[in-house]
Image (cartoon, rainbow, N blue to C red; front, side, top):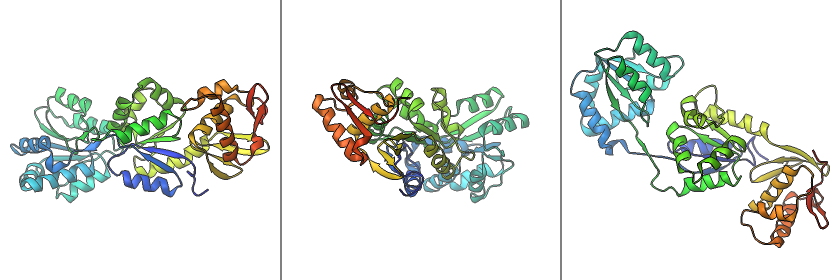
Length: 363
């Protein structure tokens, strides 16, 4: 075993910075399944962003809200390609510029602008309260979005009398190829994923929408899979569906990976069977500290035997647990493969004419 996540299978739904996240997880020993839940519309090709930028530079703006660094930088880069960078800078340099966090603040300064204030919490809620206190009635407020609409934020400003110009930077759409995401969801439903990671709220919403059986996926994420989000905004759609989400103290993917590396091993099911210590993973077991991969069919049998906690499980019940079904001899094949995978045949006992059990005392 190498790394705290050795033997664990982690699902990654990110599109942006997915390679960076996957590399972090693999360095800690995890196996990764990647199913991007979104695709990002290239900024220079985005007619919606172009139109919003033209609207913005057409008349002075009083306040600018920068929600993300990559979005704010990308906006100026796209404007440069359209020949609008100079006009955009002039439109913003006289405005009150409010970045949501330190990264967005850096992007604002890199664009040659100066921020007026930034919330210590890095939250939209604190930013909104600041705007309301300063007064926005009759003011033109540009809000740089971060991949999805912010209806509560925008509607509150408009109700306070602001004229809001929404800037839809790095707009997200469903992936052109849904195959990888569907395969990831199938693996989650089949019990082949230990944890599922999210780095944006739109990705979380996309996964829930894409699931062929919403109820089954939500049940699985509530019960069997550790769900990890990079922050509270990302977790929003999941929490709304009643899914518990582990979040790091700081909304950074490095912090998320560190939190995952602490939380997931601590939740691993540990059993004492035939004088051996066994830890469960989605697609493997650890026997006395040795990582041993287990194929899907024998793993399905093992999970059913583990749930019985030493009680006898009939061949019919084990057959029903097999992912591909089959006839009764398929159970015997799976049991044989399981004993081989465990490396200790005595861990699984045959109970003549009744079925099979693990060599442990019933709970």
